[in-house]
Image (tube, rainbow, N blue to C red):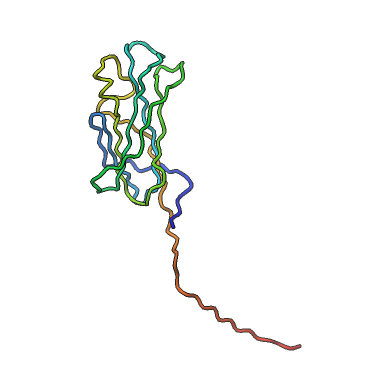
Length: 167
């Protein structure tokens, strides 16, 4: 049985990371991570780059994958869509939170794919919020394994000396 911290802590900056095209990958540096969360930059497409506060019909999305560090196969975790910012914001899209949920304690690689970005750039117009080769995530936090509770133990024998005194 494992117990985990109740509070999120800022993760160490990943020393292994890459931003290539519409894909970001990074490694969680904490050896005993059981939960990982981060923010994703919002993005979307609009016909005219000069128009601000436009209601854009085409929202961007990400596909998130993970694997234990050193494993070969990626495991699909989630597809996340960008959210619309307020109507008075110049940037149409806001950041979206993402969490892996509880995992077995270990060191993990995370892959983020901006799956609609290449489609949007082929349309012309303007892709707002991210750029090819850029970093799509921020605010990396983890929960780590606190300690392991042993489920077994040595047999315990209690011997007690009792003395009776008559008065």
